[in-house]
Image (cartoon, rainbow, N blue to C red; front, side):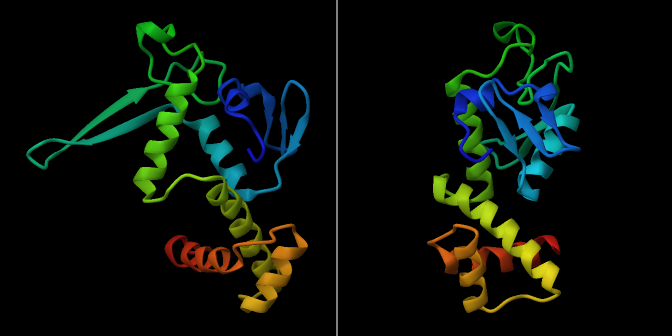
Length: 171
């Protein structure tokens, strides 16, 4: 969620997300979900009942373990149920969520930064803009569009990433 603090993400409850109206209700404000990328992540998080951990053994083999979440947990971001987190009912601690986020970015082969998060939003919006026009736009057109939506830097990176997303995910 753009602009959200880790504390807000950790304490975000499933009932606070209104997918149909594209809203997230926080304690002190309502956030519009304008980014389809974030909307898809929220949809998946709301539906997720388990997760898989894949780790490398010393011999090079992969070890795969599936964990079921405690679906009585009211938080959007659930953790593996163990005694120290009240069988998965407690929210993540700051250190736990940051570790999880870093592992996700590591798996994706990316460095985590505010720039990457900004670019994910810009990439999604640029792809939607191109889809509405029925074609990929030129670098100059992309730069003009990105400036219009408030992305004043990293134009080349956003255009490059949007092409990568289109090739990899068929968007």
